[in-house]
Image 1 (cartoon, helix red, strand yellow):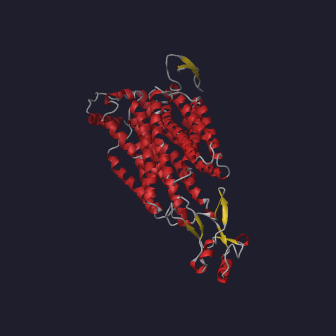
Image 2: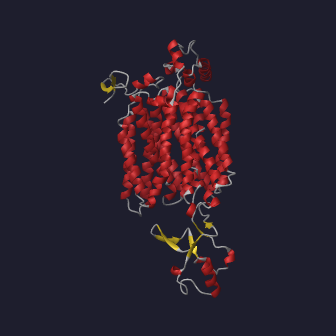
Length: 551
């Protein structure tokens, strides 16, 4: 098992079997792309003002003047939550008085929207905001909907790692696909905001679990060179494709229930994949299920048309003892060295997520068309993933990540220097900042996988992804700070991104090493060799060791 890569090298790197797993697992990620950001349109808030019922019998002049003007963004605009007292307007209209000339509007008494609201249909025809009037006194419910979705994502990140480490990658992958698709369908029949939100939490649990488990399954089945391709140009680009489909679906389907139905249907196409996608042989070996693992490898060899060696795995007594190990969360803090790696990884993922989701969720606030802005925000992720793949192929992880973090953070910080009228330049800088943070985000997945052994690898990715979701829960409130100062969110996100660029330099280097199969091998990937021994590694149970690292 420790020589898994060597034992399966006869399969090749890019045979028919690998291509099949690569594209099918990548395609299974597409629904995650549009479900992850669907709240942008499902919970969109259109322009609105107080409704005036027809029985008020107001003249056309008084009907147009019934909504007071307020200063919004430095300009006068109709109030969203107040109207002039309707009883007084009815009397003025009956007497034939004219607003402005006969009656001073600023002196009139105001009242809340007692008869509901009228919503603009220019951008959205129907959303959960218009369905349940989540405005004015209830306007806190719309952003809370997004935050609670990410709470579900947080829970899913935590439990998916442990469940798939215990019950298998494939079983949990398809279970979480069913959860995401099934509960998204149930949301269509929501009769209240509370019902919609509870179901949305469960959808979030399935959404991230599906992504994490598919990622781990692919990295464990595919070979070393294809693994990086899968983690960047595979999983991430197919996620971006789903993200790009979201504004296209939303543009043509502007009713939230029908949009949700359209976003749910693609999940059904993943059902036949159960009979095609195999279980992870690495996981089966870690559980001592050698015959099942060998059967998968032999089937892969048959698909690739290559001969199979007489003996695939040497099941020695040492490996038999290892198969009895059961991982728990505390194993991520087993020694001082492992605990340091884990704590730094958690912080890195948390702050990266704040930047990524803060910039993604702010797209409706950008100048211009909301659908186009969302589409551009998705499109910029494609070149970001390509650059991430190129960096992962040829450069050390630490320096690549640190450089891309510095790029994204410094560009976002520069936005505060752009004059208010230069909307195109501001949007361009935001897009460039998201380019950097997105590239770093995809690289983090590969980096994290390379640091942990098979027994806890999925648990480690789940735990760090859980930290990422804590950042996504907080991210909407970073966007909200723009109501006080439009540059404040960018200052905070840019500063934090530069900070984690510095933090990355203190992490161990995994470039050039095979995936670790045991905790002992995890300690060896602290640095990688390049002919010079310069770094001293110390853990809580061993004397100092000299390992190799490049300058």
